[in-house]
Length: 287
Image 1: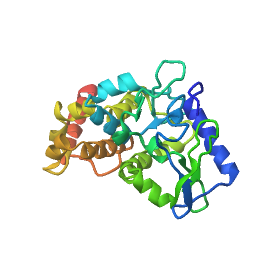
Image 2 (image 1 turned 180 degrees about the horizontal axis):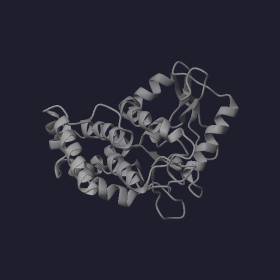
Image 3 (image 1 turned 120 degrees about the vertical axis):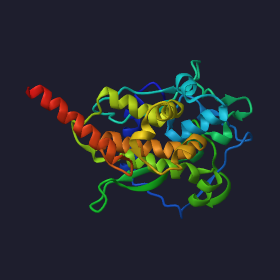
């Protein structure tokens, strides 16, 4: 998908085209594809393309680059504005400002962040789409093959393998486990209700929790958060040491702060103190 158009619009258009094509693959289907320096198109797919970065993609990349999440999103990420067509705060990889609009991590030898490359790069040339059904209004997922003859010459090269074998080979399952939690959040009925949009303050909270994990961590530990919330006693230590645990908690925090749902709860004593405070203020106003 070229980067000269709104990436959210392009994703919607591609999804519709895939649904109309009727191409639906399962993990048991086979594919023949290879990507290596010996393929004549090597590196072509790493330019002028919209690559969606999930929160886990950002975590892996910033950790692999040994930089903070603030520095990563500032240098390497771009965010389409929130609108009626794009209600969910999303982040895309910022292409380099050169003639070919190459990926900022592309080197002469290939991908410079290969071990931590984004989910979309691991999956290529596989795509994932979903279609609503009578029993599943959120859509049943299926796979499809992306064919870009001018860009990619890797189809038909190498040994045939199942889609299941390919995604495991590419290290996709680790990403899927975290991405499924993010997907669950983005499929919340709020985002699927016409006219519903997050106010600016909640949009900022969403960005912080999902894409600026270092800032979210400071928000937790530099405030009275743990004094006010009812969470397991060992949770603060886990959140301080384990970034995957921190990101999982960030998703839970968003469910609580945006929709009042999920396992996170305010301590009863804090709730009671707040009710008493509100009662006092109401009584003073009545005087």
